Length: 366
Image (cartoon, rainbow, N blue to C red; front, side, top):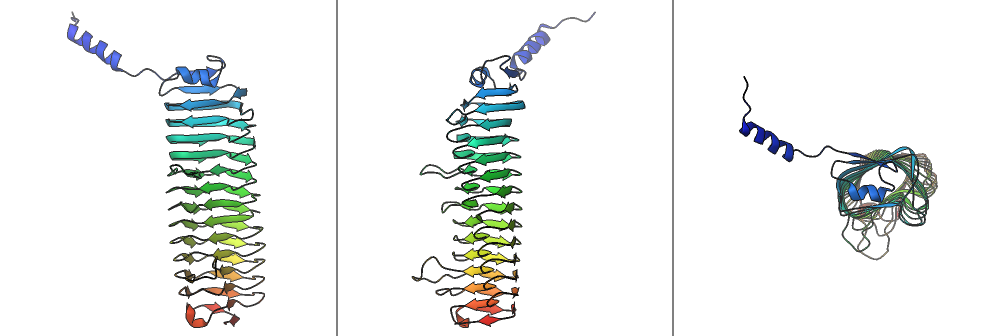
């Protein structure tokens, strides 16, 4: 006969007491009347499931490891204020929600980390779709943002900057900037942007080491502006910008293998030092293909930039235009033809910059 061991029984009881509680699914309004009520009783690992229909805005404060999910069309009504605030929290997933009618921002993420916002839709937003303040490692993906302000706004506003956001596979239709970046290490990739009055992607002076990659820009005002330092803009596709395709006023940035066509004004505007412009394809611009144009005529001159193996076709003005007070730049292996004025037009003498192995049909130096 098998004997019961008190030691084994005690061990089993201890293990049972030590085992984590099973994750719960809390239904709103089935189990709790509101999302805030569900959050008050939620434990790490739980899922809060919103039923189809309208729900009041809510605040996630001091929470960790929660999933907040919509079913059908679950609408969070901001009713004139922020719809969702995430503060002092970690490992929160917000998914499949429609954020509607916030008078300010749709979702604000503050002093939090490892937050995911996915498969959400933002409608009738007066402020920004998503605002980040001192938030780390936030993922925004597969969402649609329709806003009268900015799509995603990471301006530190005098506080601690957000870092390491991944913004991918979203669609933006906004009146302000599509994505406004401040802080370090953000990635903006494989998104689609349309109809911005500002910049589709704008890195501020305090931004560092952003990567803007493989995005599609249809009819933006300006597609990309790079201020700050150390950014990479690569393999983006820009069509019909109502001003410029890419503007660079920062330093130590790389702009590589982008396609820019049918801009109303210039393809690329260079206003910063020590950047690299490599293998970009620019065609049918209303202004010049590439412009080296300092912000000011005061010294020192705009310099240290490398333009290599860029191809420019059918610019209305110059293929490459070098303004006054531009010196110490290197142009190698570039190819421009079919320009309306000159394929290379320089307001400074040839010796002020270095030229090697370029192919220009028509050239004019000061």
